[in-house]
Image 1 (cartoon, one colour):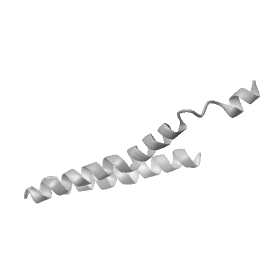
Image 2 (cartoon, rainbow, N blue to C red):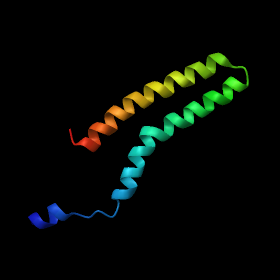
Image 3 (tube, rainbow, N blue to C red):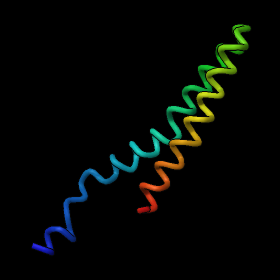
Image 4 (cartoon, rainbow, N blue to C red):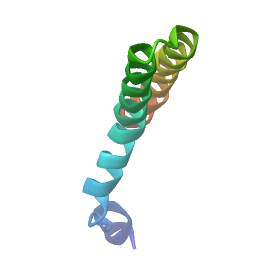
Amino acid sequence: MNAILVEGNMDGLGLLVFMIFFVGFGIPIILAIIGGVYRAKKKKNTAKVLWIISGIYLLISLGVCASLLGGF
């Protein structure tokens, strides 16, 4: 029984790591790009809000994802 728990099934591990990195980096990058598009369209307040949301999301998600990857 212990051998089954220790070895486990690692087939979906690559997808899991990809999803964690996408949540940590992908969504803030997408928000920053959308903010850049709004800045080019002269909607500076909307762009600032999106960049601030992107920065806060990046800060929080890196803290959560790092703690999950670090095992704390």
